[in-house]
Length: 89
Image 1 (cartoon, rainbow, N blue to C red):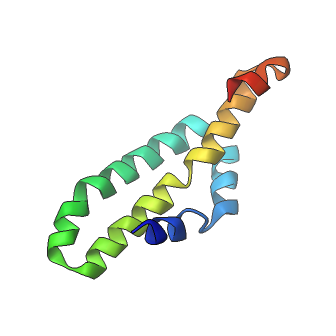
Image 2 (cartoon, rainbow, N blue to C red):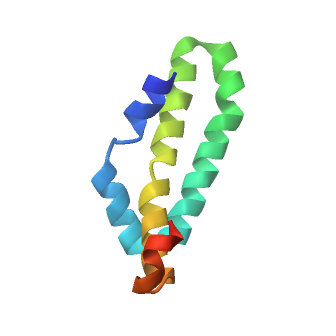
């Protein structure tokens, strides 16, 4: 299952950074958390339904979780002064 999640995370990585730059880290992170929470909630149903549904839910989880790093980097860059950024991470 870790392979399926890792296939979804790097997918469209540049577009996620663009989304974060355009809409801001908080909004994109909120939608990412909502989507990966929904994928996590639906995983037991998908596992019962079929293997392909389970793999699709895990892929959605990886895609939604992939916004976390660009969002965190964007929020750190905006909220912390340059002298404190290395300690913020």
